[in-house]
Image 1 (cartoon, helix red, strand yellow):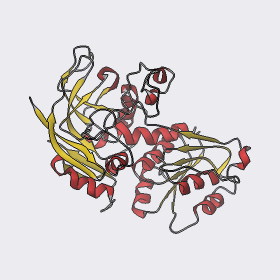
Image 2 (image 1 turned 90 degrees about the vertical axis):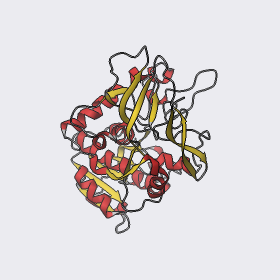
Image 3 (image 1 turned 135 degrees about the vertical axis):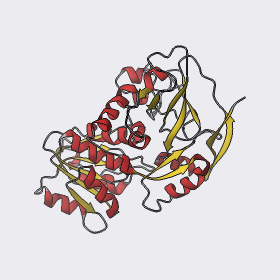
Image 4 (image 1 turned 180 degrees about the horizontal axis):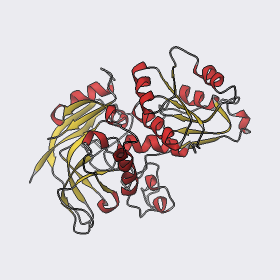
Length: 358
């Protein structure tokens, strides 16, 4: 039996690199040899035991690689082809997917449906922090990487770029809108880039790290605010003449940022929430206009599938956005425990870490 190296969840606070069998390929699957993957903030929640997964599960959900073997039913692809697959890999056969929400493509009527059902890699099946990953429903999820693009340039497409752009899309940004993006981590930076592509005329980026605010300007931010230096709500209301922003995007998952994103929103505006919250949220009465402000609060889960990936790859290939700068560090898969230590403690200006199995 052929073995591969894989980073698995052992117990809270412990992820280890072990050897496990290379998975067999079913008729609708593809075996992809990973050339680059990365660590996500969600993986850190798994490491800390804040998000439960099965012991022994291979972690990770952001694959860039080469097709090693195709299932007998998979058409339109070739072994040896460079591909990505979305972090969310729907089958497109569920009620949720056919109702227009493929990210919710999970569960069945007999066992009940639950949110995030389309997130399988590193959640319900073995993930991508390994030498190989088995991609289910491969014909629905594999997207060829255009020639000339590096792994680092497309590494954000499976999750971070798709999620950040979804935040801008869900915010219903129109040409000429003023948009505030709270938190400029990788997802927030992609939301900033997405707001620019959607036609926002003024993008206000908020963070507490000046280096991230500098990157935000490269992604399209017109105004940057360090919340450690100014009262963000007051400053944004001054910048908008007291009107408030047309849309705000919350990309951190804290009560404080959610509340600020609501307080700066104009009546009739949209709050697009991308944060993963670990406790109950409270909606302030005044900021919510007692429920009479015609506001929308919208959440989004990373869209997946090959058509979504194709569109994101086109954006990268066109040069309209360059997310390679978000990859700040590189580690071998053999050193993934050290990579987790760096990323989880946010040392050395880390944004994203490229993990190379080979």
